[in-house]
Length: 312
Image 1 (cartoon, rainbow, N blue to C red):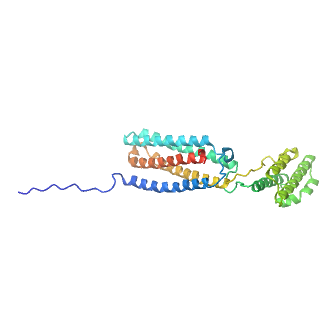
Image 2: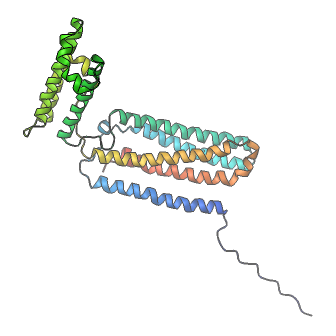
Image 3: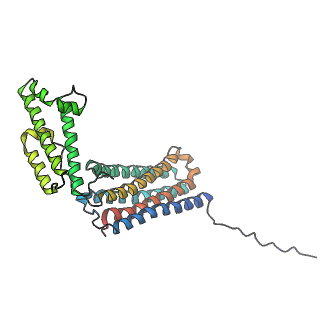
């Protein structure tokens, strides 16, 4: 009598994880390479550029806001872990609560980042707009004068269509002024424009002016009471060595990170649009979204010290 030999269990190949999680890990691997290129390039550029701007008063880097955003992301990463744990325990209301809190903290992160960007935009700390030499700083200040006088001409002589026509018509406008106040204002503007023209000639001459002399001349013009109405938004620009390179790397890295935050918000918004009872179908989805969100948090933990704190 023969006895059948028991067959050995079939060998299962592969990882004991869902395909969705494996795909997320593969995707995060590409994202790691993506941000590694950014961070590595930043380190090489910064270490190879003597005089890199590091003073927060110059770059308008707000360490407090950056630190607050770091805390916000760390807390949000904890909340998404709690949300996934609640889903696995079938506590769907708790899961929805913590997913909502994660989404809200992501919004808060972007709001704080918007305030940071607003501070730099208001001080014109933007790529390609930062003077890096004294000559560029003086030219930028003269550009502010052009804008200020152009606006003043438009207010005082609205009937003329172009600045060139307005300037040519200033003597006639002064002669035809309807009141002493209007005449005095037009004369002051004409005198200011004459001083600006003389200043431009000196700046662009071969000998040129030093930035200190230029600033003294501008301060003297600003001190004249008759010019006060035309120079309210004019301030002397100062050079920031490697400022455009700094601004380019800052906005590139933080901008791409902000895009990833928006993607994370979209991922969390999808299950939040469903009734709480349907969250059981999103258990793996929430776990994978949490992995992505932890990656976004980790990237910021690298960016924060590099951009805000470390000086090398």
